[in-house]
Image: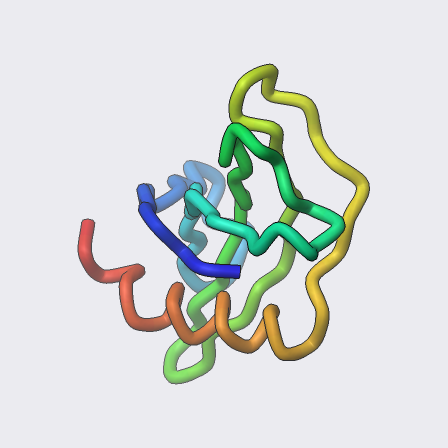
Length: 96
């Protein structure tokens, strides 16, 4: 799995109930042909919600999306893949 593009938006909590800051990422992915997520149209995205509280950042939610039709795909990240996504998000959440 390779991250080929991304968009990030800081989510607003008008109530102030939620602690920390929330960021929504939309990651464009390239998946090898031998992966069960492979799509010959390379139309796979990963939507990630990242929480940043003081010095800690963690993924609280994610799901795969078929970019061509917007459908949510029922797949999960392997531990190693989740670590790569978390590192990417930690590095890029301040870019917006």
